[in-house]
Image (cartoon, rainbow, N blue to C red; front, side):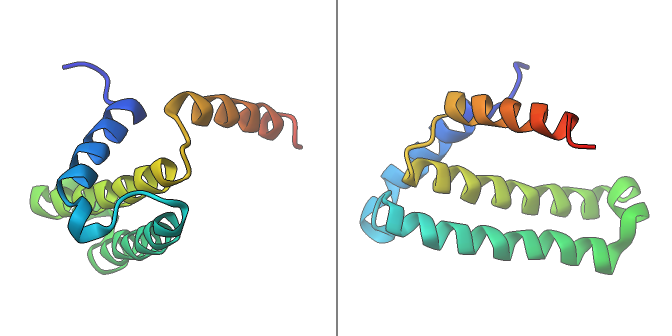
Length: 108
């Protein structure tokens, strides 16, 4: 299996967005705002699993772990929608991510 990255995630999201374009309204900065809010809600669902199930179940119970990972996927799907709505490519993200990492490495 090949490495799974942002380019493949964005390709998947473009396919999904195209399929439901009439229902969801397409990709635009205005829709990006909505996607960001939905992403935050999904992140809350991830946190809720940690709170209610605990680390041991996430690492040791297959059903809980799968649910946890599925919710993380929802977060990533909405993150990719935000990126698509604001025309942020995986390459642009990688460049800025690496620059931010370099600054963080020199911070303290």
